Image 1 (cartoon, rainbow, N blue to C red):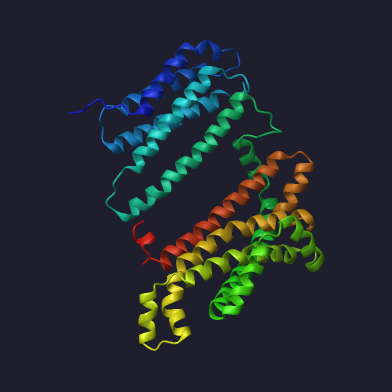
Image 2: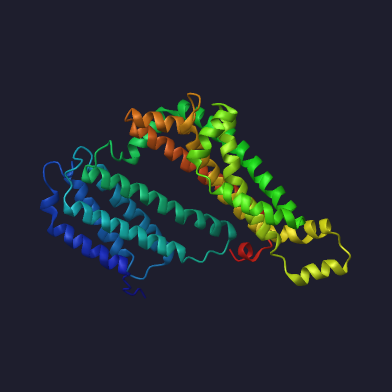
Length: 374
């Protein structure tokens, strides 16, 4: 037998609906919503979602209902404001809040689902953050259009997506210059150098005492101070940007690897000594496997640092291609949609880079409790 179990999100959504009904004339001006029917459809969807999620239906049914009503109401609001940007009243924002509350309830329901198959559970772990990301874009679009934020200050995601679609060759050339040359080369060189230095510092005490303070000092150097020097040393092309990436990624790998090599327990090290294991046998069979989570932590940190370092370095001299070059020049031309397009591509590339490293980590350190318990 179904029972009435409203969540606090549903209660607040109903209050937002009531407030929108009372303030509807304030938002129903000539240009507030280009199609007034969109308001009524959005209100109906919000009410169905709030009521349907509170009558004790199965969790899967509730999730499907919330998905349809929350996104449907948001679509009605965003499309309805087209042609009347900047004239939305209070009811528009109350209904937007109601749709956001339903999406919040949707994510809560999805997070609580117990799925029997690993493939379904993995898909759910991807779906929940995807909904979070989509709603950041929905709120961005709806608020910018409803409030009439000037395009020069903050363009809506739809304008950024349109610019990305029309500038694919330019964006592809910038990605090739910045990521596939400067970032990847500098990342591999910096992480490799940091790893080798950490092993040597672990093997020789004088290196550990002398190298770590110097590495700490180098990591504190500002990018804006390093980049012009690297440009003078290595030229205007991508090698100078790769050199900046090397400097930025060296120290995180050094510190994390040194800490990881000390993570193995004393009992395990004593056991290796009873087997008459050499330093290198102990290193490869015990200490490096124990240090693997620390090493991958440095790799994930460096995946974002490398991209930031290369883009910033391109501000100080580069050929007429590259993500940093494009951002700096388009800002001067007031082409903010192109600037945001480059930022979006950089964020997407950084997320993919981080995700690849995380997937490799799960395959290599499957034995670690943090992975087995995930």
